[in-house]
Length: 215
Image 1 (spheres, one colour):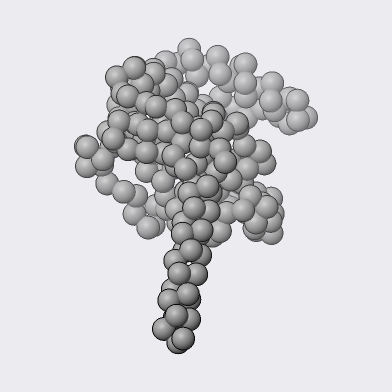
Image 2: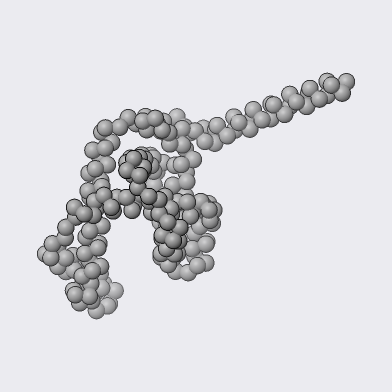
């Protein structure tokens, strides 16, 4: 009798474990295959939560998946080039800048909790985004040039109107020059990166399974 009870308990344990595995499969499925790698539905949800944290809202799952595919391209090339991960000090500085973008530490924590991100998940996301941005900056900044006429145009069309709309006196061009140059450089890097990613997309094999991945 005891042996029969033990066998029954073992069977119940196996059934419960199988049910847990099946439940996990429903929760996390493959959203896309990129070459020999996969992007999981949980990756889509994680980036969506990060977007909610940063912007208060997220893109659609399809748009987020596109971003993850682009990130795969960047990460794959960076890894092949043995591009170094950011140091702990760099990550902490990036996190500190992110915190300063909120009106207060309380607002930062409230937004983090509302987004569903744990402190560890947020730190991992900050590190990942920093790695990708650093690589793109290293790859495209050397070929980026900013002309004086572009600086003056940005000043007249963006800086002056923005200050005046706030009832403020516009800063002198000389004082705003470094900020304007960096903004233009970042814009040029983004444009080059977008072109490169579009070209790279045409050379890789992508199978979108997002709709199939929904329970």
